[in-house]
Image (cartoon, rainbow, N blue to C red; front, side, top):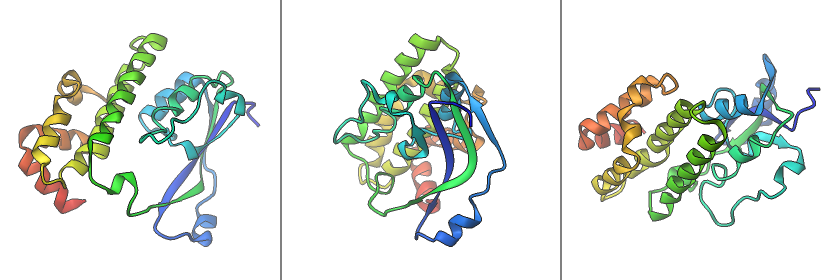
Length: 215
């Protein structure tokens, strides 16, 4: 319909697979075509699309010279942004829920944190450099929003459940200090995340207790 290189649909997480639930929620209310830069920006701030591998259909030529890294955590982060940047014909986006994903209790987001998780930083450092070389500062705020939202949601919120939680939160807060300073002025960071960052920087013990209670 749109003659694009990629297309994306919406998804919801489920605790059990229910085909009837899927049929009720799969209607389209909006669809649009984005340029690759617009798609990158939208993916970074989660505006209609994300970076999850399963959220897209691809023209296979986009994978020329690109492969998902073997045995790596966060392989979506290490791959999808670069595929989006090769979508010269654009990306078609629909808000129809066409994908259900099953939430496992042993998934990455439901386990503790370890040294392996620090590969996330290497992936984000590489992506930051790549975006700057290609787009200068045009995607700077979108990247910073993604960085801080993910470090809170993916790493900090899991670190609080570790016995050495203070050590881990210190490690996370010391990375890329300039981003932690500018978060309040970023329009793409949700107020909930800004509140979490404020409390985390103010009092790590208070943050840990709040997250343990509400997660």
